[in-house]
Each structure stands twice: as structure tokens, then as C-alpha cells.
Length: 282
Length: 49
Image 1 (cartoon, rainbow over the protein chains, first blue to last red):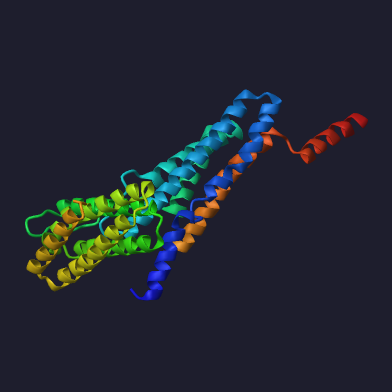
Image 2 (tube, rainbow over the protein chains, first blue to last red; image 1 turned 135 degrees about the horizontal axis):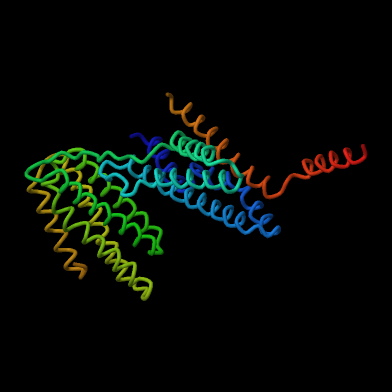
């Protein structure tokens, strides 16, 4: 991936939560708002209930749809992400169909068969516009006595740790340290992607996944917590030293994975573990 | 079916079904003023005759 592609991807990632996809469902049923108040003004209780319930159902469908689209985006971007746990897009389509059928039948006064046609049309429209949720698990092949599921589980755990490091980083008020931690997370993500692409690396990267990432998380969370209470220059310098070592070792981890050199990597990891202990972090 | 065409078709169907159902619900709640005037005109007209 060249620099431009990386930039484009980072812009897409940043804008993804604000994507307009799925917003249509928030605006389409807007006519139900005046309909509810007019019915209220006229004292038609059933119409008030039907219109208000219909509007609430559409909002729920829109919320499910947006969450489903976000889950689909994460799934499509990641090599290790499992399929979304809940079929949110399908649920959104079902709720939109139910709301449309109910509004057509009880709100607009159509016969039941016509209302069912409305419901079917809404369901079909949702399917054509947004599709349904991805249901295929991304395959990770077994390697060196580890099943694909075991490898996926380990990678997902590691990915969760990286996200936690990112969250802890958000609590640190230091631009330089923020950038360095972002870079470390970026390299860690790359290592996970490398392992997912070639699970033979999993055996050699176990220590990195089990010990190392957890160590970095502890360091970062510890610093994020303590630096708000005490502004110690020594603490900051210690943290900076540790980040230096982590950055180096992460880069070397990646390099060693590429070079398939096991022994040297373990030695480096021992060195870092010792340093983390010396700094009082592990 | 190409994705763009499918999305467009989906958009049209969604707007048609949800838009129509909700707007008809609104019209049923409050008959439009023009429809009301036309009805009143018809009644008045037939009474005049």
C-alpha cells in the first residue's frame, strides 16, 4: 500500500462513523411526526399510538441499520474479525417492514393484504439498498498444532488489547507520547495482519501476543492513570524510555517474523521484559 | 444485477413504500385544505342547485 492509499484509507476510517449510509431511514418517516400531533389534537388515540409507535420502530430500525453497517465495515477491513455477532441489518429490515405494514394498515387504512405488500416492499427495498449481514467466517488455516479457531481467538484477543492501548492513549495529554503510542499500535496491527495472512508465524509470535502486548497495555494504562495525579518528570522520562524499547522491539518483531529468525527474537523479548521489570512496570 | 442498479432500485422501493405509507397516514390524520375546500364546494354547489 503506497502513501496515498494509506492516507485515503485513514481518511475513510476517520469518516466512517459519520457515513451518510443508513441515514435515509431517519428521514423517510418524518411525516409521522405531524401525523401524530394532528391525531393528538383531534383526540384520535389509536392514530396517535400507531403513528408514534411506527416512528419509534423506524428510529430503532435506523439505529440497527447503522450499527450493522459499521460492523460490516469492520468485518470487511479486518482479516481476523469474525462475522458480526448479530444480524443487525436483517433485524433492521424486519423492523422497517413491520413498521411499514402497521402504518399502511392501521395508519393509512389499507386492507391487510395491501399492508402486507407494503411491508414486503419495505423489506425488499432494505435488502436491495443495504444487503444483509456477512455470515461467512473468514478462514484462518490451522498451523503447527493450532486450529484456525485457536489462532483467530488469540488474534482477536490481541486486537482487543491494542484497542485498549488506544483508549488508554486517549487519556494521555502529551502529543509526542500520543504519536509514539499510535505508531506502536499501528505496528502491532501490522504484525497481527501478518500472522493472519500466514499463520505459520503464530508459533513464533506467541510470546509477543501473550506477554508483550499485555505488558504494553499495563504500562500505558498505568501511566495514563498516574500522570494525571502527579506531574513527575522522572515518570515521564521512564515512560519515554520504555516506549523507546517497545518501538524498537515491535519493529524487530516484525522484521524477525519476516526473516523467520526465532532465537534472536526471544532474546530481545527477554531483554524488554527485564527492562519492564526494572522500570517497575511488570 | 449491478450493485449501483440494485441500490437505486432499493432506494426507489424504500421511498415509495415507506414514503407513501407515512404520507397517507398523515393525509388520513388531516385531510388537506384543498381536498377539504373541494368537498365543501361540491356540497355548497349541489345545495345551490
